[in-house]
Amino acid sequence: MSSRDRAEAWLRARIAALPPPQGPGDWPRRLELSAGVLLVAGDNVSSCFVNPEGDLFEADRDAVTPRLEYVADPERRRSVLREAIESNPELAPLLDPPAPTEGQLEVLSADGRWRASVHDDFDVEGGEVTVLELFDVASSRRTCLLQLRDPSLRLVRFLEARRLLLVDADGFVEVAVDASRPRRRIPSAGSRAATTPSLATSPPATPPRQVPERFVGELIAEPSLVSMFVFLWVAGLAPIVPAVTLLIASSGEARLRAVVWFAGSVAMATMFVRIALRPRIVAITSDGVMVVSWGRRLPLPMKRIVLETIEDVLVAREARFAVSARGGRAPGMKARPDRWRIEARFANGRTIDVGTTGTEPEAVAVRERLLAWRAASVG
Image (cartoon, rainbow, N blue to C red):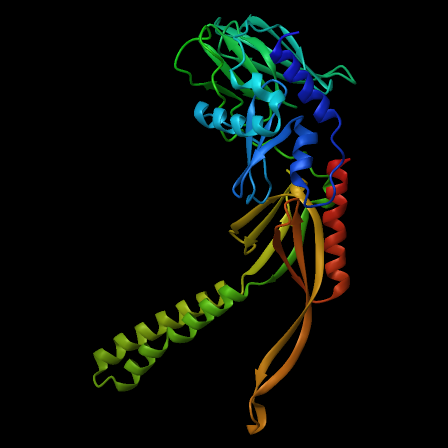
């Protein structure tokens, strides 16, 4: 067994022995278990992971949903591995890039769940293509069939569950099965006869699974306080100058112009009032995304949240007060009806405001609906 084989075996054993996550904030352990990687180094900005094949990954610690990104810079890769070798000497053979490979016609994922195969074929125009097929091993069902314009591609290995590395005479090709543009040629300085090039960053996100019909629709519709403040303020100011001009107009022609101006400003103020009253809508779409938008007619999307990334949903009572000086009394604090705020929490501990409701049962219903979809998506 070569030194590199021993390093790979050591990594596989360490990954297999990893304990389960300790809690919602233990996202590094979740990445290790889901992607088959081991945390080897890190700082305040990112955490670095390595898989048994010697690929190095980084995850942004400040991201809402930390995800693995391939390290493309060879110098960065070597510096991280040197740091990791200080505490784990077994990783020393990974300093050198993996040896070039000729590729295979069929490969199996590390967890044994997926099988991929390729064969050469022709498209409808007679051009040479490579046909990539992906199968679910448990059911033997084909889940994907892709025609790749590069002829004579061969499989190297699975990078993730539905991401593969392929090779031909010109270099390496990365295929993300679920991406809108699945094929990407990995730039390299030389041909495959050189060393394996590092993989580029930012792998395409896997689209979420389809949402059952009972979950699709609005969750919350509430007034947008920011838009109400801005547009009602503008609507109140708009007619002032035309009204003053109309009152001081001395001639018939000036008065006519002022009337037209005043009528236009009233129409504009009415439009601003309608804009101010547009609600903030939170809804679940059929592709598994929670969309926060402004208004129902011609909605303006403001935020998109993939439901499968939500770790938990929190409901908190929100006490509200207002300054009151009615009846000539001294200003004082006056209690207003409480509202219940709903927040979505992610694996790294960060939260995103979903919205507020007027009653606790409404907030609990929204929370249960989100958690029911979360449970359905994970199950």
